[in-house]
Amino acid sequence: MNNRLEYIEPGTLEPLRYDLQALYLNDNLLTQPMLDQVLGFPRLLEFHVANNLIADISSMADFTESTPSLNTIDFSGNRLTSVPQFAFRAFPDVLIVVLSNNNISYIHPDAFYNMKSLEYLFLDGNHLNQLGSPEVGRIVLDHPIFSLGLESSNIESLVPGFVEGLADRSGIALDSNPMRHFPEDVFGDLLRNFSISDNPVSGKGISMYHNWIDCDCDFLWVAIDGWLNAHLNGGHCGHKDEFPWVSLDDVDGQALQEQCLVTTTAEPTNPRRGRGGRARGGRP
Image (cartoon, rainbow, N blue to C red; front, side):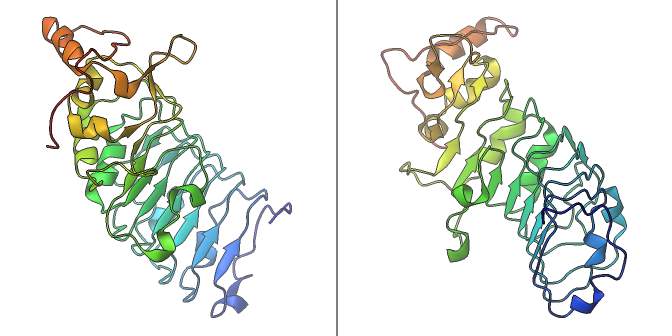
């Protein structure tokens, strides 16, 4: 790490094939994914190539050999703008993929094809502006992911129980993204399939901190769902420069529903919760 490596000659790491357990190439000047250098290494557990100049990982789709023990792939802090088709199909047993702090605005629907063991996916610090690309919803629905990380935090803050094992999907973090809309067709099934305890616990539930959502008809499905609403943590309506801020869980679901029934183009702004308190309704 912390050198000025631009390239590693193929075969350079071959003498380490049967001993290497973790490879850290962070903070260099690499422009290639470099995973082809460790294919077939039987004991490799972690591969980190964070904070380099990698802009394209499409070549990984052509891999015909895997790395059987690999559980972590880290491409954070690079220059990726998309996650291409079949990018990770050679790694069905990988548990953690970190793509944080790139420039990703597009994820191919088959980007994580064949990743049967994927548990943690980190996409925080990218440009999924709507957080509404259907690709993101499909990733979670097609794989038994325990936690989808789309927030500005480090790995330790999101997976403290990883070494102890997880029994269920305990939470989803959507913090600190530049999204304004929260459509049901993208996130509805995703959130309803999380087995969050009926009693909200700190660190569990749906984390929305540092987001400013347009609390319009796209948000109605959350506002009128008592179970989802009860597990919503953080987030505000409107824009961060508009005052006063209105918390997402202070939205008056009944009033918003009435406005949305009046016209299909209604876009109510910052509806506050009425005297009735939290919208009623059970978990679907």
